[in-house]
Image 1 (cartoon, rainbow, N blue to C red):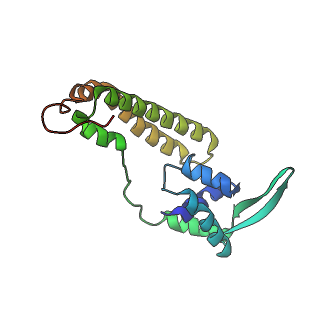
Image 2 (cartoon, helix red, strand yellow):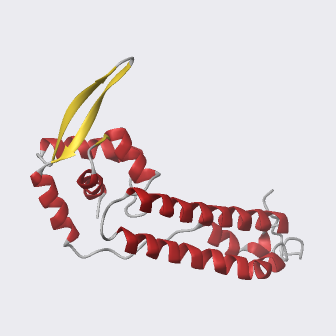
Image 3 (tube, rainbow, N blue to C red):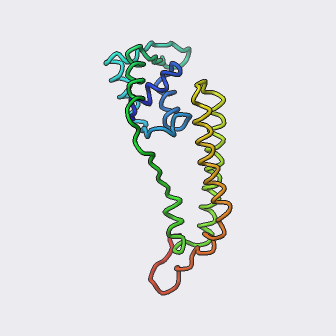
Length: 185
């Protein structure tokens, strides 16, 4: 799926400004589905409006700039549903933390401990985000999605907590063993 489909997904749930859509797909409840950059949202909305998939209206605000509110059209909803019928791509998972873990022997113990703590905090934060999103999204499949996400993140957190001592034990073991490698400080 692409940014266009993601914007239609948001607008299928509620009308929103470009800023609200941007926040939801980059930092919010819809950020776990498809990668979307700040710069891709507004061009997608403009194109969808010219294609008749969304409509917009201006709302005047006292002391603030006028805001443009988007709403999905029947044609937009039809395209969104059609996109849902296409085969999904495999999930993509990338982690800088896992790269550091793979090469922990070249990193000081303090850096590894700090990275583990930061990763655990991140996982707990993501679990909290899922719980918050579950309270605000009124879709039948939302319970499944929240449960799936919570399970994946909780399993990662449980593994991290159960095995952190193993990673800490190998941290820094190759720093000064004559191989010429020096950890970045």
